[in-house]
Length: 150
Image 1 (tube, rainbow, N blue to C red):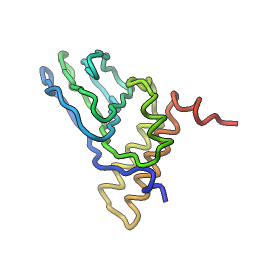
Image 2: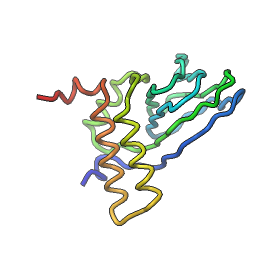
Image 3: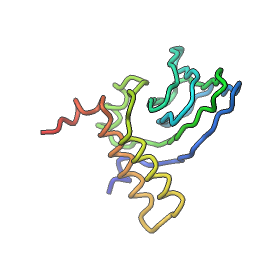
Image 4: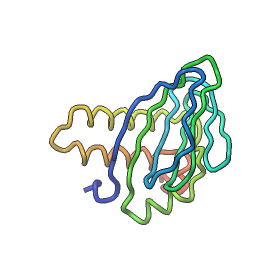
C-alpha cells in the first residue's frame, strides 16, 4: 500500500573518521541524514550547515552536497535514500528546508525500524519500510504544519 507512494532504495549507518571529506556529488533520489554523533560540516547547494548530534538533513534530487569531518570526533550517521512517487509527498519535500531540525528522535526510531526491516527482509519488508519512511516524513517537526494533529 505505502510502497506505491515511496520506496526505500538503501539505508545504512556510517562512521566518518576525523579529517574525512566526501566529494561533492548529487543523485536522482532523496536522502535523509540523521546525525547520531559527531561534529563537522554539511554542504548542500552551496549552503554550509553545522553537523551536531540529533540534527536531521534532507537532500533533494539534483542537489550538490558533501560532508566534511574537520573535528577529532567520529561523525556517526543514519542515512536513507529513497524515491517518491506521490506528487503530494514530493511537493511537501520540495518545499522543506534542507535542515529539518534537531532532536528528531521519532525520525531516528523510524529509520532504525527501516534498517532492521532491511536486515531481516521479511515477507513485507518493502511495504513496512515504505510505511516507516512515510511516518518519519510525516512526523518531522517541519511537516506538522502540513499534517496538523487535531
